[in-house]
Image (cartoon, rainbow over all chains, first blue to last red; front, side, top):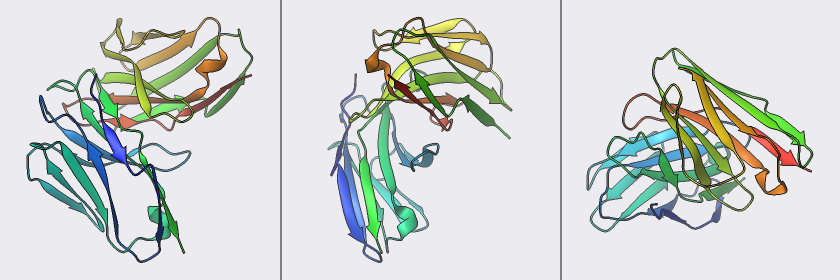
Length: 114
Length: 111
């Protein structure tokens, strides 16, 4: 079983400010790193799937970086808006095919204050 | 397009009662199917996964079971619910190595 950890557990950010949070995972036997955005009472929404060391992906104001050698990924949100309030989850598969599912971190609960 | 249906959205059940949660996928064939649970204060935990009809793998010992009677149907069951079975249950599917799509979840409260 993988050990995927996220920090901080929760984060209050002022609207308009930028923020970032961390996901750490075992650097050995790495296959992929997923980021999801999860709003209450909705399905987790896939943000990024990252596989290559040094990879950087962007979706609007949200971006993510990946360091597989040291086992961490950062998620950045630029110019936070109230609609960014959600729990952000990272996850990693324990096998290359991913058929046996993902191991999730506990998430970072982000609250954007107007 | 592919969709995933999960029901009910909320459920309140007494201790000792049975449970059946259903998940169906549309618009794809032979998906990998998953049941996850988020208990209070914990992260999403994989309960079961299935790579084909009748094939079920369990990740953790528990009071629950899963079945896949049809290619696009995944059912989570319990004969007698415990208080510790309370949580948020999510069904998910994947068809390629690294793409997962989740249902909208079921909030189960055992009283």
